[in-house]
Image (tube, rainbow, N blue to C red; front, side):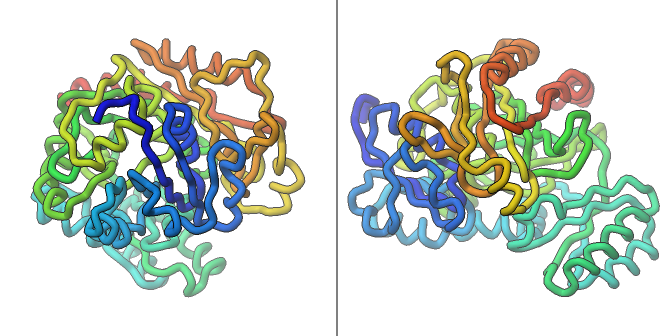
Length: 429
């Protein structure tokens, strides 16, 4: 099938995160319907794409069904078994992401080096463990609670005293509702993600190399957010890909996975240490990837879900993206959201929308208004042959936008200048 063919796309979204991709697919000339599961996020996308209340009533209409989150693996498999073309997970890839211990066991099974970690059911046993084995640690919640990104804590103290303090604080505020969590020994180095699309049989090249910026403020200050922005580039080959994801190719083929999978690692002079899987679109990763892909995104997702083998036509150089957010981001506070941010208008000084990706927005008579409840307004992207070019383009676009009370990181991409030298010297670029 060639592009130029109109197809029916059904997007099934957990929190409305895939609006940008759905909207782009519509602008490419396809028909699009979107379902959002989370109630407070229901308004997202209104006025951009057709919204539906019950996706199951539209599955026969769809030429392709796209799931944007983990946890739908079983449904994806059932739909595929019934003959539908589905972009999304499988039960296996869901488990890779959601069950950290399973993910670690699978890495070991596939002969990938991992950082030792230990799971705990309660805070006291973890505190006792650190007192017996002083070191710097990372606290990683398991299961559903890992959605609350600010609970992930990276210790800096060599004896683990800061981690003990945080565990005591969590015990006060969460009690027994925290669930299981892991303590992982902290490894120093460069944090880097490698990801690729998988068509049910093999990985589609090129692979993507991403550097995330998770802290709220520039220079890595403040609380951890899910993400404030990322920089990336596409690569035909990658030693990091070879020693991690590549080893899962035959397993993913057995599980008939058709989607996107990412593994983030800490790398240093001693090796590559995988941390965890994301077996779905990364957010904002997918939007920044789209900025670097030359073909229509809808068409590309269709080909992957349909099991076709091809090479993704990508831009040379770097792609970069920054979130523009409003209160209460990254916190959960209905009152603040309603006071400062609900229905705030996104204003463009010049009517240029290139590199502007709508996030938690609705479109009322052509005005873009903030909705949902988390306060993520836009993702703004830039591309360029050098990282500096990409940064300049992106921040130029940001300066064309007025969103009342908005804030964003001013240093996305700066990590690259220091870290590329290290990666080069370790032979990992």
